[in-house]
Image (cartoon, rainbow, N blue to C red; front, side, top):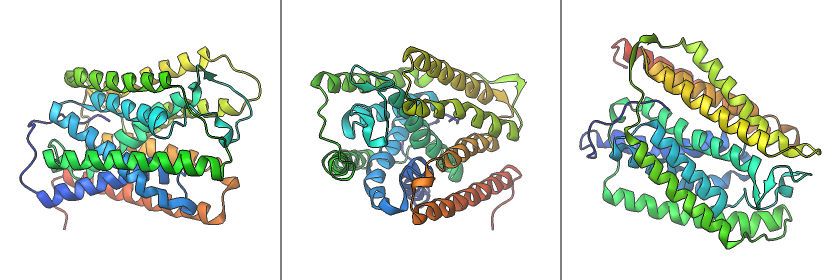
Length: 348
């Protein structure tokens, strides 16, 4: 998400209590926004939030720290978010590699070379945006004074990395060795070694690309005016909609040519990136616009999460409704706080 680049690569010394709160917020918001509010993680198995904090929360935190130390922007964060998604889909839980019959998929649409390409493409976009970019942006809007600073010292980076690795092992064990065979009754599937090697190579490449793109910032264009907030919200939701259609292709009995959705998805992703880059370079692009961008993405993911709720338990449905209402109230409160800051009003 568009934000300012950092002015110093040294961790902040002042406001340590706020930095700790910011770290805790990002650790929680990453799985909360990406998993719980969307309905992917429901109340009936909310215990998996713990490994999700370890993997997604620490992953998002480490990505933010790397980008801030590189003095990079949201394009670098996006590239690292894609690397995190590849790690999840190819190495940790391997959901883009194993056959998707646990999802009720009745066809092999999009499955080529041992990869669920439609599902993988969707997850690349979803996990890099809703697990990484949106939570980082929301956290930095809550703690604007700490936005441009790294939050961790070397010790914190090592601890976060260790927690991430242990959480990844825990997530791998719970899903592949327990949930998939015992709950979904899917026979154990072992991807070829070559597939793992391709995944590792992709992760390394995306990290390298993220580093190389650290200086790629949209040049401010005073002649261009930032869009109105309602337009940012609605356009963001419109940009998200076609991405969700990728998942619907998995349930179509008739085979779909793989190249068409893949090329269309990549082209649409490029359009979204260029649109946001154009917005963020316009005159008057401020925190309220960043809030509108995050709000539009969050609003759509929460709404889309109800599509499969007909098969949920009452506890799961009510839990999602209540949490979504709380999230909406929280985002509205954040908008009011941002407006007060912009007017120079001190909260109190």
